[in-house]
Image (cartoon, rainbow, N blue to C red):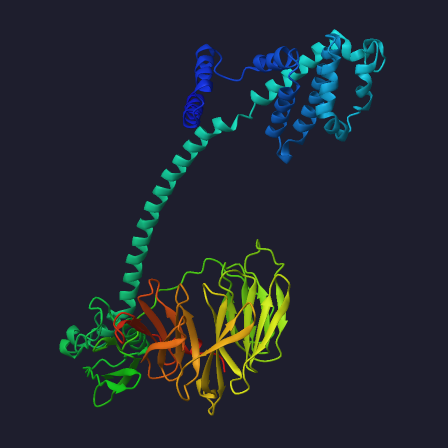
Length: 592
């Protein structure tokens, strides 16, 4: 009952919204006389056998039967569709029989004129029926005699009644009535989700508490060490949260975040002390010494522990790279990165040589990967995504850069070490254009497509002297290419003998181009004028990568020394944020 009332309210709302006032009045009138409050098969039978057929409304009759067939259009209800098709044929034949009995042969001819082609295509042996209106007495014809009998009509009405009653009084209900059930299901699921989220937050809090306890137990010196020292003062030998409590508080260097502790120091110190077996029962003496030594890339600290008696000593030495110190604005120590949670992992085994570069397409459906043997492969990580674009491209030279077209996934640009720029059409699976830089600048280090205009910029470099990756490149050349004519448009000015450009980045409207160089400089270009508008020294070493911030009020740079810096674009040269990633950077440095 609740479902029926909810469905009626939805119908009223729709009729009012569309302005069907007459239909609304008729709907309200029929609701007042409705007694069964459910499916009424007799009214459907009256509509077919007492309205549509006697009044020769063939078009409405055909539409009603087609509507019933649409209700059972799913493949799992093939038996119902077959039964309904047989009943449809019988009902349409009764329409013809009733018209003949009423002396309205013109209605039969009109019916075949409207539906004749459709009936012939069904293959239900309709061909003889086209001759019925031209027979003098079809009720006596052996082929049609049965259809003119009263017994056949009663059997047809009974069959239609049983079929409709079985369908609509059984498990199948109208879709409008399902909305209420689905609404209740959604509300119940929302409550379940809320309860599960609450339980999840409680478990996460418990997990964090246990992890903190575990971290404390690993960081603190175990009580067994104190006992083996012969009961000496615990304030001298215990190792509290950050460093040995025997160290004076003033000797602890300030941290960027006061609430953080140097996790690496604590863990290493605890592990080394646990590994040390103290068998001596005499008086032990601990001397702590911190001697920071500065270098160009940070600082290191040494903590010496002298344990022993009668002149004998055992020394534990712990060295921590980039201890948690703060030098001016930049934090010299390394911060712990949060663990990255991997939701799923797919393995692509197409390459036979080490992979040097990977690029997602704009939609994220396809990936282009390059290996050191000069092979580029296009593939997808999702099994549900069509693999029709998968391809293998043999370039014959080392791949230096990859770039997808910004507006679609159709074009992939490939830059090589021999001055080649290939444009691969993933739909046609062929190279649509093969460009070449000048012989003086053979290494195409980066390619970047404009997000608005049909152009791209290539950063090419000459050959240099040196064994380091960045020392292999000499001077730079920035060329703007038209992607319609596939010809060079202009060369952006970089000055005399400019160092190689390693990374390019457009802003959202393609009007500003940022370029990073091997001398640590960041250059900014106005693409409308084709001129450099500003630039500043960002790193003491080569810059590996460059990227505009999300709101484009800043720009991020990654130096080859492992530092990530965020630069303000409003106040040139101002560092908004920094992070030292040198311990991870051995995995980020481009392959030679």
